[in-house]
Length: 285
Image (cartoon, rainbow, N blue to C red; front, top):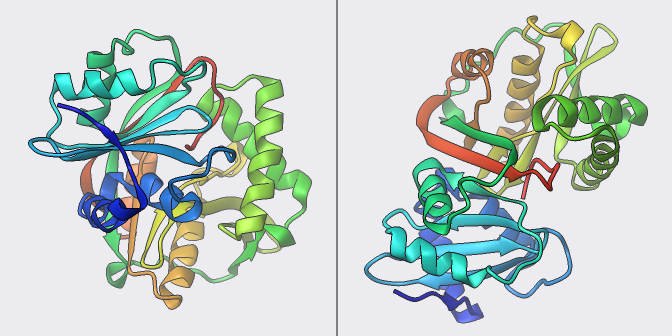
């Protein structure tokens, strides 16, 4: 079993293959759309390899050192060969993808014993937006992050990195500033305004013309338990639907999040894993 570097002529195969495994391929698809096959400078640019019969698949590593994979039928030998492709990398930050594949790759590569700052298997969910169940929205509206005091959303994002990712104070502050700058540039996130107060944030961490993947949902601790995150997400999905988006996918990190998402109409759709080694403080690839 061998892997070979992807070439431009392979795009007609790569994209349909990944779309056929959409639930766990959004980061691959989004990065590929934004950076192509040859970006060796930006963090989310990728080196990509392809495998063929009997185990067709895509294996990639971002310039920042995050492994992304999609090879549902790969065996241990296939994953060991994939690991050989990145053996000379000085920085390897983590791995994300469908749970069975991530766990099989890490085990076969001998990386499953590495210390981590985040090592989660999370239930995955999907929603056809025609089935979106809208909560009551009286007295609430969404605002783009550019219309929100920057210090507030940076504070929220820093708290997210401290609470969820386990980043240090310094890492969290730096990452928060970088994240919010990127969110504003891409117009990918929104803040929920209720009775004149900003109370929650939501966003899309990967998107295609017809599909969005949810990420960056956050409510400050003192405002939790009031349905604000659910309301923010519902309004953002409603907005996306008016722009032609037909499907949404996400991964839930807690029982409370699962309840909130299912109340909007999301249905269980597999499992997704995110593993960050102890040298990293980032959330996404």
